[in-house]
Image 1 (cartoon, rainbow, N blue to C red):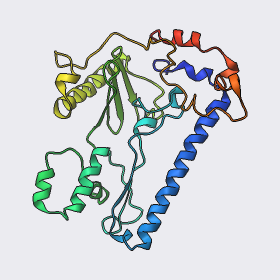
Image 2 (cartoon, rainbow, N blue to C red):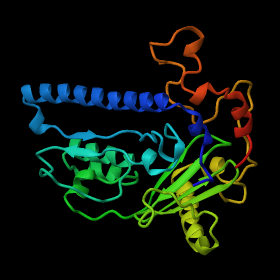
Image 3 (cartoon, one colour):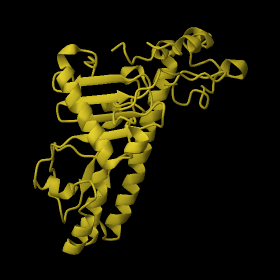
Image 4 (tube, one colour):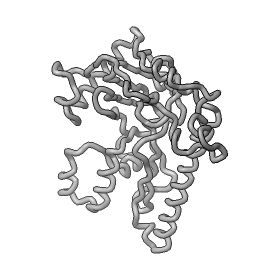
Length: 286
């Protein structure tokens, strides 16, 4: 997947890669422990049987997928988040659903429980996006409609649409298109964004994105004056001393305690390479 590959990954030491992942897994373990404390108190106070719990996250973590860190991409590692809904009053145990969902579904889920199903409340909620997760879990209509995302301001705005079998992403910076056949390429290793054989598919999904912007976002702010997805000349960070975009998490904050003095600065680079020349090279479009 050379189009979006971040070559900076090749400069990291194995020590840095392992440590960053270890810290991430430690964060996950810490969160699990704290949730366990909350659930224990809810059980001891007798509130658990009458409580609806939704466990989710605002984004995933690439954690090295596609040689990238953090979240500002449309790949599955960034988009897919945990989603567990628990409430014995409303959902039977071990219920699973493969419906497409988004965080927009969290609000109507809690709203409908808090209003006890009052019809007037549901009418008030009707114009808002999102589906009731409890109803989805109960099998009340399989959800197959596309889900959308929009991140980052101009000139690095990224818009994407995901269906059950396809994903299309539009990068404003450079007008780069990404298209993935998720059924046959779940790891998103083959970008069909420039493949002439998929022109119709790209057009279909791009149209869905534009329609969604007009319906749910700010068309005047996002779309071009012609009503299309905007494409800007490829730009990169140019400020002095800028690091490559997908820098390793915590690269300046948690060097190994065994190092001291000047040795603490470059520990994360493979073979202690001087990364400044790479920063200059990374500013060139790939």
